[in-house]
Each structure stands twice: as C-alpha cells, then as structure tokens.
Image (cartoon, rainbow, N blue to C red; front, side):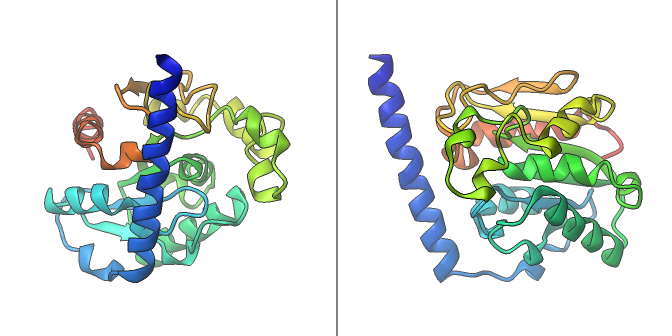
Length: 226
C-alpha cells in the first residue's frame, strides 16, 4: 500500500511539474509587477531547471501579504553551479541595495541561498533563508547522474560538503520538507535549523500546497525583524 501511495505521489508530482513548466513558458509574467510592498523583501530561488515562474503560487501569496517579491531573472533555468548562481543573486542584492532580505528557495535554491549567506558582501543583507525540499546533505541518486549539473548534488561534492560543514548559519534557516521526496531519499533535515515536516509527498507539488504557505508564515513570524 505504501508503495502505491508513493507511486501515485510521484505521478502527481510530475503532472505538477509539467503544468507549471508549460505555464511558465507560455505566460512569462512580469517580474517587476511584484516589487511593491512595505514588508521584508523576498528573493525567489527556484530549483534546477526551474524558471522563477515555477514558484508563482508562493510568490503571489507573499506579495498579497505585503512583501516585495524579487525574481532574479539572470538565473534563467538555474543550470549553473551553486557558486556561480549565488554570485548572480549577490550581484542582484548589491545592485538593488536590498537589506533584511528573506531568501525563499526550492530544492537547489536552498544550496544557493546558503552559499549567498557565506559571501562577505551579501551575507549582511540576508536575514533568513526558508528552503523547501532542499538537498542540504545531497542525494545518493546524483552519483549516478550523467549530467554534471545533476552530479553536483552528490553527497561527495566539495561545495555541498563545505556548506554542510558550515553550521553557524543554520540557526537562520528554516528547512521545510514532506514525508516522501523521490529525489532526496535522505531528506532535507538540517542540523541546527528550524526543521518543519509537512504531511505532503513529492518534491515539487509541495509548492502548491496551502500547508506550505502556513509554514512559511510561521517561519516569517518566528523572525520578528523580518
């Protein structure tokens, strides 16, 4: 029965991916339309092969709540290395002179967000990182991937291991994840972080779940200055 549930969750997960990838390609959207608001600025950090539009449900919700929501369009489909993508985010923060920032990330975006928090110029600008289904400890599946962009998530990757060893930042990170993630079998629990497990299956579909919105609200409220 558990295998059937997980198989069904996997199928629904990829149906969700297909819908939002097609929608994001057809309806490009205007990243500048969500920049109004007087609460803490939010920076979207999507996962690998995900355009910023993939995080539309969460972005729209936070914008309605009064947060300026920033899409770093230079990330494109987020195919570059974690350090390279983090530099693009850091450059965006500098150019816009953004401070007290909330990084909101999915999957690979969580690694990028934590890397941004290690960079001398961008670190003081970041208040907290909220990561959803992020492979902080890597994924054993990545060791068998053909593409270098996917092998970078191997638990043996040097960048990933350096980030994992940096425990000082974890108190400013909220890691939110489901009960079953087919891409991250080891889970997304992060030592020293605020870990929140939701009763949701799948790697992608969690982004469209109302329980995630409630968990993000709770993470923001737990950080008063944000």
